[in-house]
Length: 379
Ligand SMILES: Cc1cc2nc3c(=O)[nH]c(=O)nc-3n(C[C@H](O)[C@H](O)[C@H](O)COP(=O)(O)OP(=O)(O)OC[C@H]3O[C@@H](n4cnc5c(N)ncnc54)[C@H](O)[C@@H]3O)c2cc1C
Image (cartoon, helix red, strand yellow):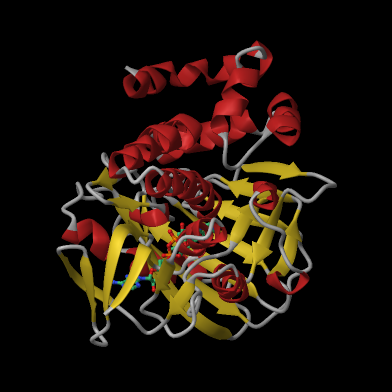
């Protein structure tokens, strides 16, 4: 039987990041994934804000498009346009990106085992579908929203989740902005989108219910090219109430480190993975597993508030009917707001925006028409 200090289950962006940082410090790390190639098939739009550059350097072959803005359509097609001259986000090929992160983890010393699905853990030994057995001191669940580690260690469930579907079409789009479509008849509980890529474009949707049905409706009049792939996945819209139990911890989607506003989880998951790596190394260095608990406090301190604000904003948007959504987009399309968003907007860290917003009553005063809804959420 193989032994290691840390067993990491899931070689997605979060798992490979934590594996790299722990292996770098010289600990024995085994990184396993049930897939043959981490990242394939791609179940994600791969849209990352420029904050990704604080976590990793994107390679040229990973970038499919530089995104300079967004156009948001209300149910009656009121438009909120935020277009800038500078790159605000990247569309990234996650098949290449995730694979590169896994190889980076391997080259820093982690052992990478693919086609290895975790089934069970007993007495600090993990059992896999291919009969592999691994003994570990610490186990990390980076195995996505349906985490097996979370089930085995009996973590509180992720109750709020939605399903997203994406289709790729074989035509290039010249636009360097993304389109978002809001509305209870378009995508109840979330939104639909169009994202340009290098040689193709993506249509996608996430909804609370009947995702397939709403997607069929949304695609009409927008599918003027050949559909070359369809994938789907689950997006958590809340964080788990606990992310450390005994000698285990959860990161990324497994922990619910996903923004409820956009469904994006890569930047937050990689940040949490960096925090987790330090706590794991600390616990190993001091031979004290109780130190793992500091991860719970630290990630909540660093990104917890941003994730909470994203959840509150999602709750607010979901409380609006179509007429109110029209009004919201109309108010948001005023020059004061678009100028503010161009200057201070941040897809990942709303906490920073709120602090700046408070000082700009000309921007937020018109939203007072929604005060009842806002208070309902805050109080
Ligand atoms: C339709 C859709 C669109 C999205 N678009 C975006 C976007 O544009 N931008 C963004 O930032 N985020 C987006 N997301 C969210 C993003 O995909 C996730 O937040 C991100 O992939 C989470 O990374 P992770 O490493 O935590 O988990 P994952 O990327 O889910 O990786 C988990 C890994 O664990 C492996 N695994 C699972 N179970 C086991 C097991 N039992 N044993 C071994 N291995 C296992 C899986 O094979 C997988 O490789 C989207 C999600 C969906 C569904």
